[in-house]
Image 1 (cartoon, rainbow, N blue to C red):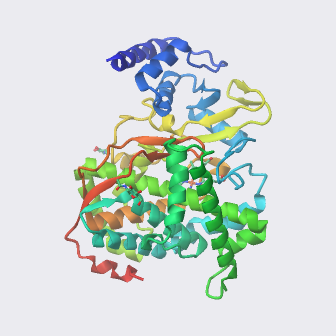
Image 2 (cartoon, helix red, strand yellow):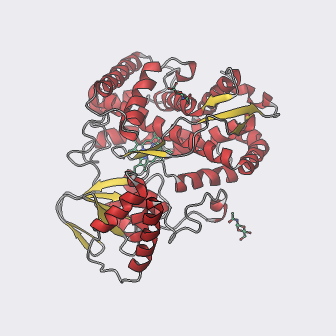
Image 3 (cartoon, rainbow, N blue to C red):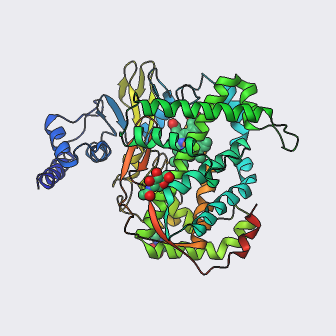
Length: 461
Ligand code: HEM
Ligand SMILES: *[C@@H]1O[C@H](CO)[C@@H](O)[C@H](O)[C@H]1NC(C)=O
Ligand SMILES: *[C@@H]1O[C@H](CO)[C@@H](O)[C@H](O)[C@H]1NC(C)=O
């Protein structure tokens, strides 16, 4: 009741506020009344508060909250992305990713050069067949499971881990063969339980143990990989290039980065896509039809366009950007539009707010599955699920190929339905690494389709 009143009041205040012309050289921030209303309406849900403030301060293009500046305007976002730096002093303090090249770009130019070619679209496309056979391995696990209910969160995490292993490291992690319990449990402890859900703190024993666990496993994997004779492999493996470029410790730390960034993100996206396809079964059917029509072409050429599947994926990453913001800092005074930033400010380019803003998008809060069939991409920085500029997501081609192929192969073989255990779609935010995860494991009822899977036999390795 109180919550509803607060929401209504917020709407009215927002409407009045929009009639007042903004003072462009000031950074607005919510006063104590507004903060109280926000807390009444959304309790501790910071993401929802920020989303509402994004509408509130739309005409300013930015606002201040909790000591940070949030940017909503694509033009200001452009300036922030190009003028500001990534990685301040306390960035990623307790995180296992602290010493990786996620920090300042000046810190590790050799590492960047060593890996750039591997992530190019053509290099990634060459590895599509390996990716498909990993996806197919997951599908076989679905088929052989005991009941019709599958834990899609768990399986996509294992699949994404194996894909990163095969595609980036040319190593077998055997996650889908249930052989990485320790690594998977350590990654889940750190990214879900600690950073996204706050169930354990970053100074707890569990967290520290998980951190050591990930470090030990990565060390072991790197040592093994360095001893493998590369006779059959074209070019050098990533791990060797990394090792030659920056030595053992940095190579190991960056392997952790690829492991975590490459696994968490795609593994969080697929359950969200499936959750929506279960909620909108006719959309699921339409996508399945597309998969049926195009599967053979896709097997022959994995870059075959899948217009509907791609539109739905784009829309999912618009409405629920798995990376909900991009963070930057300034080290010296700098101008963003008419705003002068003093020394050291935390700046957040607020993807979540930009993607869901009614001023930019029709039906901004609705899932419009085929929106992107018409929207011939989008102008400026209105749509930035993978970031932009020189620090754009290095794994975006890998992620996109993996997501397209996984959705097509899964829908070709299975129908997904709501089960009594299926949770509602809600998110926990990892503010440190800028990732959102569904707050519960996504489980669905699945049943095999009538489709003839002969065409997939070539994928069984
Ligand atoms: C749906 C999947 C994914 C999304 C939405 C996503 C999104 C992003 C975003 C928004 C950034 C930050 C850009 C910035 O700060 O300007 C980023 C950076 C990064 N991503 Fe991804 N990503 C995804 C998948 C992947 C995958 C599969 C990898 C594979 C290794 C990966 C590796 C990285 C790395 C290493 C960076 C840091 C790049 C740098 O600092 O220069 N990501 N990603
Ligand atoms: C899904 O799998 C994970 C990992 O095995 C497990 O910890 C979790 O309890 C499962 N969730 C559900 C809802 O079954
Ligand atoms: C796409 O555009 C066509 C023609 O302009 C229109 O009929 C159709 O409804 C649009 N589809 C969507 C999903 O907006």
